[in-house]
Image 1: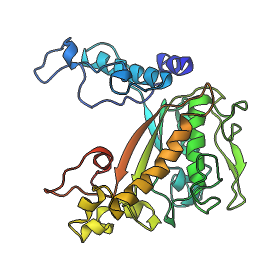
Image 2: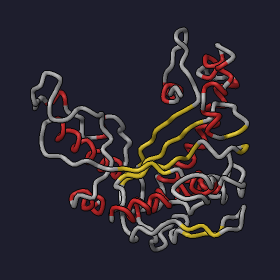
Image 3: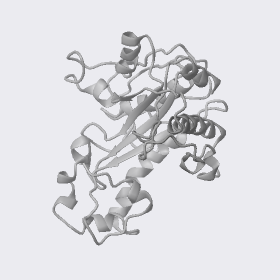
Length: 305
């Protein structure tokens, strides 16, 4: 954590995960020191089981937000959204035609600016138009899912790049997977290499999960869109998704289980590398105008596309 604080203190930036427009002035035009407008800095008030690393990251971000709200000099944490599935498999994606090594645009930021982004968000979903869910290399945390499947190796790369941003790439063996950042893709036989970031802590990490509609036989971005889901034709479908013990609700939990297995690994990547991750859920669901009470997991998964 000291390495990340040093990066931010030196002006490298991180990602300011705070509402826009809440800077020096409040709507009445006055700068406020009212503590009731402050963001709590102790994560344990929201999550008594939060790990020490998660508490430190949260306190850092909350302090930046509070400084901005009070009109004090603050810092902007600059981040990057990385789409490893497109980098690896989509030749039309990016600044030249052809597939790329995972993390190509993470490295590109440094090539252009001389600095790495202080916050990196990675896509775990939606998949790349294949039946799924599946993974590349079967690992201890992903053994419940089919392994060595074509176009699924990016999922492993996303997890590995996240650990690399947090702990360094390359780094000495520390109990995590692929500390060297290189491997042979078991499905294609091609060599895969994540970019070096100097081998030390380089920033904060988040994941986004663009979830195809629950029960979708194919996992890809098109299946995250409401018009392709059963809800576009069946007005009662969403009610079943958020009703426990229905088949549709079971499909939702199945999808989120894939996410949970991968994020669970990040909490145990080694005694010194426990990795707190921000999470953004985005799913192919639309909340009906009325008649359905949404709560808990399903509420977090009800973004309209």
